[in-house]
Structure formats: structure tokens, C-alpha cells
Image (cartoon, rainbow, N blue to C red; front, top):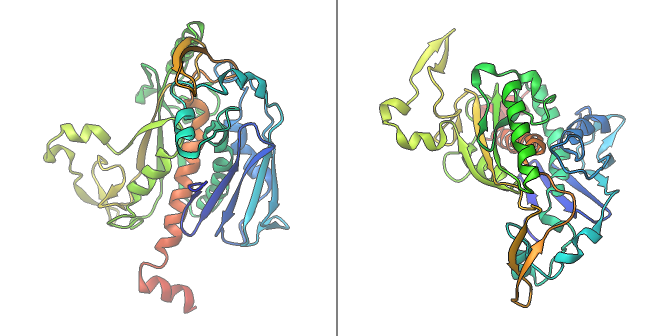
Length: 366
């Protein structure tokens, strides 16, 4: 299977299936000398693991990470970093009734169309558990970014029709509310809405917003490797994401140029923008302002209502999905959006080091 690799210099390959023995990732191109231990990774994996709240799947997994290579005496060695997380509570029997049929909203049909077979146990490679490898690799990328002062923070902007109030924004709530909303009142409303969805054996979607602070100007290339284009590919590669925005996003299409342009000004002898409609990028290159992006997630396709579908023989049937599923993907995907953003930015930062001769001379002529 192609397509399990992303990145050019800081490159990752994820592997494993939802109901296999384990899942994991190999990072190639990580610089040596970064302090790294399993607890650094575990903090991020704990944010995405299942079974933590009433609005997540009841599947219980410790998601304990093991670092197999690439770290010696607490520091990265510059060689490939291999990490794995073992599956412990697979219940493959929950999927026997869909072995020969196609679940609406899932990749069952398209997998069969491409490969001629599929792993029906939890979706195989198309399962949300594939993101374990992304988050583990993203934790390493975040360590590198922290050393440069770059900060990445993602949070739930909306769940269904419930949206946070920017005036009530409290970053300390992101990792304490079950919804990952930085607005206590909106979180309570969203929880109530989700519980109602669950009573109706239904699910809902939502939006994750991510902000990157302290990113230097000049990151990204002006044609195919634009910063926003690379971020779009990374975010849209996350299962369940159906739309990507940066800056004002789709709202920019309703504005006049005079409303959308960000004026430049001088502040403390530094060129800055008076507004940030662009979301931190101009011409595909970072402009030194906050990078602001949004990922729009569809409703969880596994719902417990009877649905119409067909089996592999083309017979129309009624299907009722069993198993343990999230009523909403968004809260557990917040850390995944952070991870994919971090991986994209680290890869571009490393690439950017060779874009100017003075940078090369500064590195080699010491």
C-alpha cells in the first residue's frame, strides 16, 4: 500500500491496523540531540486515547508507547526513530455482521474497489487508530519546535451548531473540558447536544481551529510547496476532515479587496500587519503573523441506527452497526491536528535552511 509516508526531510511512515497486534510510526530525518523519552510521547497520546469521557467511545486502551530505536541516553541519535503502541482490547466479533457489506460513510466500498479486499475489523488502515503514529511523531516535532519558541495550540471551535464565544476564550480549558472547547459555557451546551445525539443513536461533526505562534517569516515556497498547501494536504489527510481553511478562509470570498488586504505597519522597528485576514501566509510563505487554520470534520459515520446499504453481491440490505464508536470525532482529533501541523512546519523549517546562501555560509563558516 502506497501513501503511508509524508514529509521530505522530516519524514514519517505510519503502520498498523485498528485490530492488528500494534500500530506505530517510523520517523526518518529527525536531528540528533533532542531530549526525548517515552513520557514526552505519552502526554500527547493520552490526549487522543479512547474511553476518557462520556462523549467518546467506551473502548478502553492504555495506548502505551514504546520507543524501539533512535534514542540513546535520553537523546535522539539522528537515526530512524521507531515507536509502537500495542492494541489490547480489540473486539473483532463486533464487525462480523459487516464483513460482506458496505457501511454508509465508511471506506469499505472504496477499499474493495482499489485493493480487491479489505480488513473489515474496525476499518483497518482507514480507522481513526491510525492517527496514533501521527500523534507520536507529532510529539517529537513539537519538542523541536518548542526549542525554537514556536507554539502550536489547537482546540474545538464548534460541535454541531454550538460554537465557542471568542470573548470567553480560556486556553486552560482546552485539556480539561470533555469537548476540548476553551469556553466553559459552550462546552456544557455541546455536551448536552451530544448526549441528545446519542439518545437518538446519531452523531455529529464539528470544527477544530489551530493557531501557530512565533513562526518566522519566510517559511514555505511560492509554487507547489506553499505553506498553506502543505498544511492543507496534512490536515485533509486526517480521516473525517472534509474541508480546510486558513485565515478568513471561505469568508474571504465574500469580501472586497479593500476589506481583505492586511495593511503593513512598523512596530518596534519590525514590519508587521495591522490585521491577519491572510492567516499568517502571503503567496504561500509565512509572513511572521499567527498561522490560523481550521479543519472541518464530518459526523462520525458509525451510528447505531438501521441504515440502507448493499452487500458485496449487490443485494440491498438493512444494516445495524455494532461496536464502540465516538458520537463525535472532534475532541480526540484536536491533538491530531496539532501533530500534523507540527510535522508540516518542522519539515518546511528544515527545508528552509538551504533557501539562502547566507544561511548556508552561517552554518558552515563558523
